Image (cartoon, rainbow, N blue to C red; front, side, top):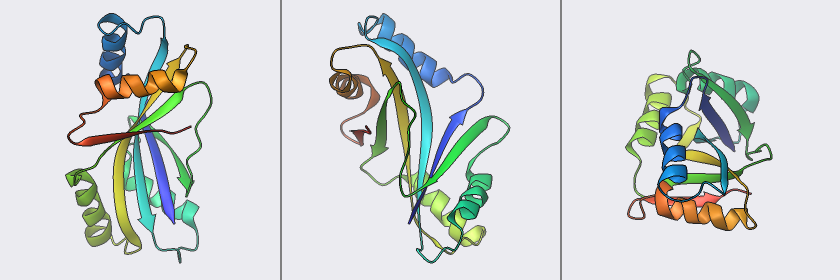
Amino acid sequence: MKINLRIWLKIPDAEAATVKNTLLRRMGYEDALEGLGKERLWSIEVDDSVADPGDLARRLARELVNENKESYAASVDSIEFEGGYIPVKVGLHIEDGEAVSAQNRLRNRLGFDMVRGVERSVIWKLALKSEKPEKTAEEIAERLLINPHKDFYEIMT
């Protein structure tokens, strides 16, 4: 079973603002891009024997979410997105040291023995007004959001 934690900032996100400004002012997407947001995604593989995945998700969130400046939504096995934007998932196809460290911390220091794997990625939420929004999202991902030597992306529709 996989617990997914979508995490976003309550405060203004400087990285998202910079990406949006770059797309609008330097890359020519002023007619296509209506808005842009960013979320972090932790996907945590746990034993199927977990009795209450919702409770476990809340306990994991206490360790991975800074509630002073972040909000989160938890789900089990699937990820539901609101409408109005194209979600683009960007992750590493090389070993992610932060995910390995989080897994070790959860299992070894905090006693979450049921954790089997941890993946970390970023969800870019692109509000697009174009005839082919998915194609535009792919173009933006390939031109700006990823480094092809270490990153992959997935349009999550």
